[in-house]
Length: 546
Ligand SMILES: Cc1cc2nc3c(=O)[nH]c(=O)nc-3n(C[C@H](O)[C@H](O)[C@H](O)COP(=O)(O)OP(=O)(O)OC[C@H]3O[C@@H](n4cnc5c(N)ncnc54)[C@H](O)[C@@H]3O)c2cc1C
Image 1 (cartoon, rainbow, N blue to C red):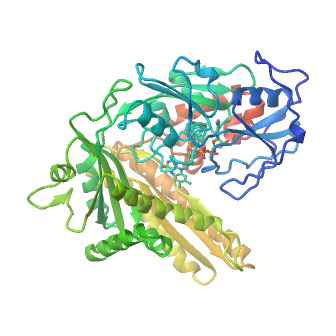
Image 2: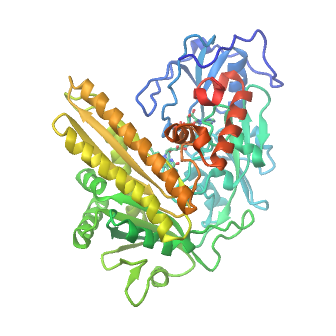
Image 3: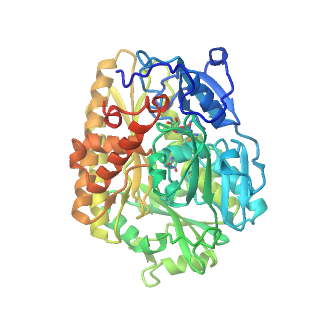
């Protein structure tokens, strides 16, 4: 499908930046593959100076495909090149570094190179080049400001996703805070001089996947967090939605994030639950088969806890506190019944700072990672697997009825997928792994379905794919109805605009969305249509007026 036509410019457009001549035709092939397995037909430029490279590419009539850590390039390369009137596509990747290069705090943000960092301790801000990871940003903050200083970007891919990619996807981790919650500004390169974007205008960049320009740097506020970190894993029965809802409603007050001024102390004198995450027993079993000790042994212990408790899922709680871990647990627990929100903690497993938390994270993040990896590998004698994952973020009130309504929609989805698996047994294998976010700020438990079929079963695989897509659309519609009934709020998903478009398609059109989402989509459409063609060529037809 042709999404746009744009002629090759005769002269450099709108640029006040002296773009150096780069012979893009002599660049190596990009050899990048997106999450859907589609390879990118483009040349590659890895650069420390994103704005300069973008200006040169646009001046030469190239379209720009921004590339970050490639941890989430879902459908990113799904566009038709023919008929665009392009000289070609160039994938521009900000250069990274083993460790960030520190530059003076007074360095203008527009001058920050992709591997550089400027910390302004007095202002409580850190300006980060697009090619760094937020793990590197936190390392630099720990060294310069103190071990408790960090940015509140907590994606579980924090060590591999890039600063630019995280802003472009609007990704959020267990805390369920979007980058814009703590973003001071973004430096955007779209062919002209780099632009500083801040405040409400961040909506024209965050979550837009680079369709409006390339993030060259991001400036974030940093905070001090309480010194002690803890984890608690509770076996739960996922199909008992009322029990799960009771647990989440009880924990809700501890999940509220109140941001102090930049550089200030978060959750002073209090405990903050910075994550309530779900790991299904199925994905834990797969993890145990492939993992190494000590995570394997610990995961085996957790499986045993599931066995004793008759549970099919684990709720993984993490938090920061000024208190000792035992005191924190005591404050969360009902001392009479020794339960948290009605869930017995008898089979719970606790983790505290240091190596134990590393093991905890290896398990919590290893299980979903394996599900993703399995979906990418084609087994011998089988077709390329097909996979899809849910991504709808629902902010729920501290009301167990409302939460249970939302969780019931997922329970129905799991039941429908399991029924499909039984129906297709012998022709298509249906795998379901559930993991992800249960925090009341954002209930978004990703349900990944992966289909496997033997070579020669293309027809059966295509039919199964259609059936799963129909179930997923029904889930999204159920979530929209549940939210409308119960005062919950659908805020989009972790993949920014693509998740919003998927929600609108499932709803049967934007007119059926809640007003807040309709307004966001209108705003996104406006920004995409105003963006240079060299960037907007990848955006879906709904957003380009096509
Ligand atoms: C193990 C694992 C754990 C994950 N955990 C989470 C999680 O907790 N929460 C979450 O939200 N996501 C998560 N993800 C998904 C992914 O890490 C995020 O979406 C992340 O933000 C993508 O960053 P990236 O640098 O890899 O971007 P890429 O995958 O390279 O690109 C993603 C999109 O952003 C665009 N882009 C990249 N860089 C730029 C730039 N500089 N300027 C403009 N556009 C750009 C690309 O063109 C593409 O459309 C996880 C993924 C993995 C593999």
